[in-house]
Image 1 (cartoon, rainbow, N blue to C red):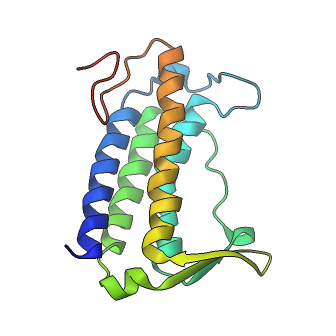
Image 2: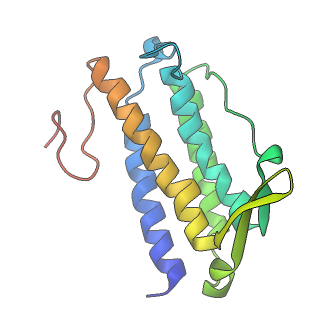
Length: 163
């Protein structure tokens, strides 16, 4: 199996699971947060919906400086806003994954004010900054939902709410 095919399969699987979770966000709880230092439920959902944007920063460049990274997403108006952002970023990034294995194996660097923090092959950077990052925040979102008595969907297997 080609590297591209493996990444596409993983991407499609994780994006479907992510959308399933984002669909559970209630409009009347967008401002809820579990702690003063935490994002609101809506801001967390919008952040997750925006994370595929990192695909362009990785797949179309050879380095990114954190000083020029996209800003934090802010507060959404509604769940519809979150889902629209996710659908748009997911689809755009999916198209960008149409790369050769050689392009996906090319090195990519993360920098801060010109200083290299680390370098990884683009495929590994994509998995880290897009896929793993989304999975991390999906875990947070599932806890937010649970704390608000909103059923958590089955993602990798049954949840306490769905078999």
